[in-house]
Image 1 (cartoon, rainbow, N blue to C red):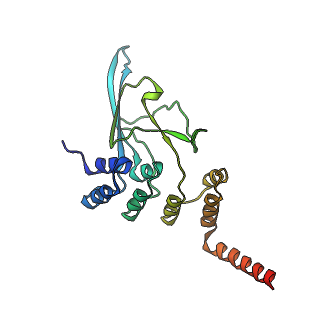
Image 2: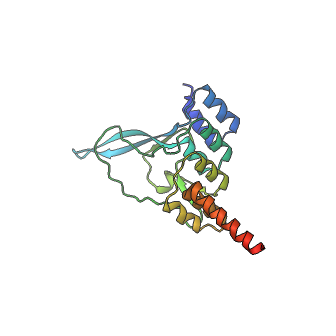
Image 3: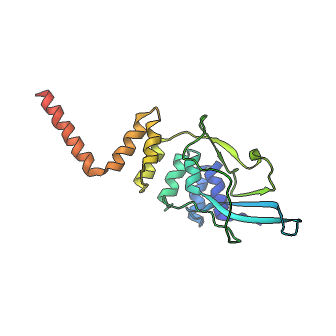
Length: 204
């Protein structure tokens, strides 16, 4: 069975040439496509036995993956074709009920700059994983100021989380861009006018 356009788009965003991304979107792939993740595992039953269970959910969006892998061209293509920068990352189960998560969330990478993420591929299937290393791969994060500018121009909100992260980055341009965006054009113009007046006064 041929892969769906959305699956192929996810794979192109992760590893393919940008021309493939554009072609797939023009052919009908959604710029908001998500990676498909399936977990198959042996679960205990109420009678003391076991049975195989399977759950399939949608995970990261194409835009999130393009950002994660630092693919500036892919980010621009997706945004130009209508990718939603505010698309929520909500995992809904097919079976209903509640799910207990024994884990944690974090807004930052590890100390070495890596982040554990899903394996590459438009469709990822895990069969009864037993080790933490068997459920993820590591990506080295490389902040990209041009990607940030693209996202800000598309309506991304800047919160204290992003500002705190930028303050820890050795390149001050990251913080300057975020602060400028959060203040808005009115305050930026006021600041620029004041700086110009100070400069003129010093020159006089």
